[in-house]
Image 1 (cartoon, protein in one colour):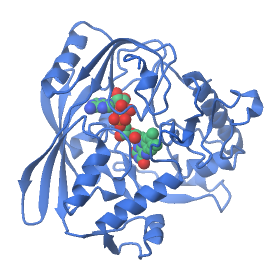
Image 2 (cartoon, helix red, strand yellow; image 1 turned 60 degrees about the horizontal axis):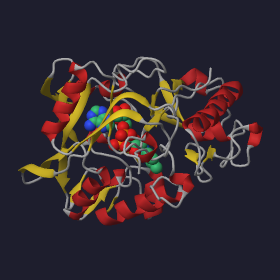
Image 3 (cartoon, helix red, strand yellow; image 1 turned 30 degrees about the vertical axis):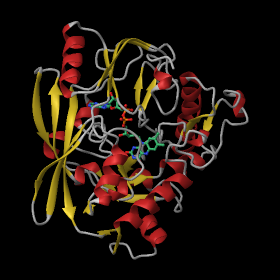
Image 4 (cartoon, protein in one colour; image 1 turned 120 degrees about the vertical axis):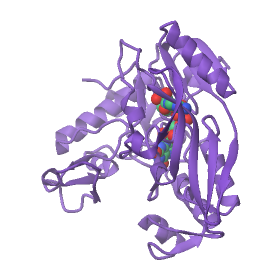
Length: 368
Ligand SMILES: Cc1cc2nc3c(=O)[nH]c(=O)nc-3n(C[C@H](O)[C@H](O)[C@H](O)COP(=O)(O)OP(=O)(O)OC[C@H]3O[C@@H](n4cnc5c(N)ncnc54)[C@H](O)[C@@H]3O)c2cc1C
């Protein structure tokens, strides 16, 4: 395996080489590698699981720091709670599995999300009625501007839907790579989990149906985890090396949040969910990007048969879910970008709504 080729470190398995590659396994190595790149004024790209990254075929003209730190530490236990600290590079799903085995509630609905723990606050990862903001106590970060380690709380992070100040500090550009990585590099994540023993509440209708319980009722933790994993697998949202539907960055577009007047122009059957972000005054709703894509004529598997003279089947929408953009084995980043651009433009044409990519784009942008 070519160590410095991003295709070998991203779940979509695309992306060219980096000039320099540094893999770090301790926090000291991590802060030193970041500080060294910044002192030398070399473009920096932080990579962990590579499951939310799309990097240009030309590669990255700078230093990639691959975070591979590990460890779960119990900081404090009370009668009701357990406070843990997890190293940034620790595989997220291993933390979820550990919490479930310990009878701790809070992150079980986030089972099966690929990638590292340190990346979870970057876009406030979420699924099945939960997101990381609900259990996050604080994080320790290397602040590249102040050049020191500081602590940030959930309030400091200004979490939104798939968003935080960390993600907002990344600037995607095809020519300037100075801010390809965030200002704050997460070193460890502190979570506050609840001791409930065997049971946890279910907060998502589809999950409740699959578990055969009422929304808001409780179910066994292990059962919740397994049901989430099964639901995710049926949509190609659990990594499986033999299944091209999972060679992706997960959902390629976020669900659009639009003013209520915009939503009212859509057909009644278009799914919509109440939505409120702190500090927002206008009434907004969240739409289903998957529905908008499908009903703009881009169905599951679009691209697989070379439709629209696109990319000869090298890349396509997943055959299980219209929101995932997949590599069918030999795709390039540009192939994925081509499909994404067609889909985004088709949705604008049909619905007048511009979908926004969820993964971090480095050195690439959708066609204009
Ligand atoms: C099949 C599949 C399913 C998915 N399902 C979901 C889902 O249900 N919900 C969801 O929210 N996401 C989902 N994702 C997206 C992705 O798994 C998450 O965003 C995950 O948290 C990314 O972690 P990572 O370690 O792979 O990050 P990477 O892809 O390595 O990095 C992503 C971004 O975070 C930055 N970054 C990484 N580590 C750090 C750090 N320690 N400090 C600062 N910045 C850092 C990187 O520079 C980059 O900008 C899915 C992806 C796939 C492939």
